[in-house]
Image 1 (cartoon, protein in one colour):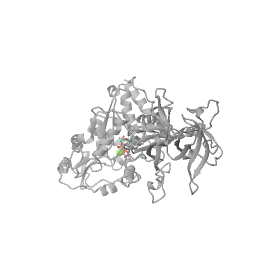
Image 2 (tube, rainbow, N blue to C red):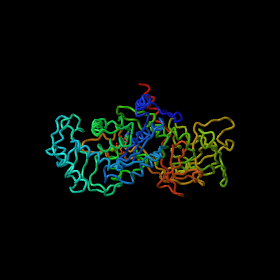
Image 3 (cartoon, rainbow, N blue to C red):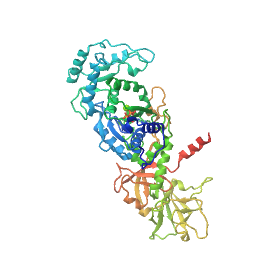
Image 4 (cartoon, protein in one colour):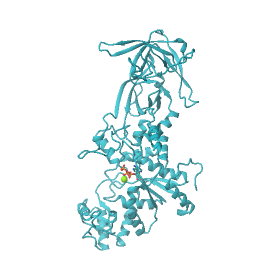
Length: 566
Ligand code: ATP
Ligand code: MG
């Protein structure tokens, strides 16, 4: 039954199938999905699509969703990855309750299933080396060849398999293979390997095993054991489905329904754990949670709210064919979410000193400022104003170009929540660089409004130098310069497409004093500049570090306009 309390996400072809299955009482009306990560890296936003889909469907249709670690690769997998995956799924807003499983929980059962297949003559021990197995496999245009060991007797196979488990053979010397069809047009059906020998410790099962089941054999059995009704996976598994069907049918056990959907791809980034691991290991980024990474932990550290990611996933939809989504679309949902929840503050990233020459030295005032104009309940705060202030260097031009309406010699502008300010003089050093500018203020314009109704074409943000909090701000840009980073010249790899300007660190930024209470993870809108998140790793009391989450300009809206036009 559909859970009417749950906010319904958009309909998609998978939900259509599920609603039909509920109507016809298939699986006795049960809905049970799972998210099956391999713990060999941190989750990325592509995984978020799978998480939102699997957990979302369970939530919406009063079903259940398991998390299951597909841990068939000892050595490549680590506890660190398991912990990070759990944290990321929770942070995204989903809960598996008591249904956290490991494929390794089923190793004994999977072993028994393998024995069953040997007993009915559908699996055999092969002595071919891994290299020979590859050579015998054939290609898309050539059929494979049968292994000389294919016709071993059932008894011999059972005995050898037992010995494999007992540790009698070295790594790579034998495998267990399914006996299917070496001439099948589907390469997955050409006697795939079910078990290999690996004398290696496993993070869950320790040294209990020296043979490990292959992913394809394990995955479909794990789904079956858990009673998964709808096994949702990405398109590359479409060709594996006949193999899964074969295993389940031959073993005559519960058969989940597999449905494939398209992977998420995003411009200017790569979504592959292997490629991301390479960036981490070679030091191109500071770690899996570097805010430039498309990992969930990177996006979290950058300041992306989980709801923005869920909204994005919901809006891109679920399709049957691969496509690439503009990264600007993701950023659009980040802005949309933050606009409502991020408190505003004033901060200057690239400071230029302003002296208000007619403002008394020792005077200071507190200017009432809105915490969030989008939220009537957000209230106000008092921001100190004094004779010496910082403004943004880009907000002043000695010789203003056309359409530059901000501060310039002789010109008057509004300082937000404060006064109308007029530039009277420029001070330069011996090299001709501007070191400070002198201005006067109009005391009649307190709060930023002129009683005579005169207007200003620009409103600038500012920070009182005496009260300012110094901070470090990191500006992030796309990690890659190409929309498709995998597009490289011959002999190059994707690191050739890394953006050399993906990180700029500004050490002399000044923020209004209310920021003193900021704690790691807090997100603010710096007026006119963008959204900034207090870094969770490097920020300390007295030494604030901010990561830019997003600029204020929504480039997606521009792209969308173009799309609507065509
Ligand atoms: P990667 O290529 O990044 O290693 P993977 O598919 O090998 O990804 P798994 O840990 O096996 O990673 O994935 C767990 C689940 O997440 C799988 O069901 C997989 O289909 C899904 N998934 C992985 N990448 C994406 C993606 N880009 N879009 C949608 N779903 C994805
Ligand atoms: Mg995988």
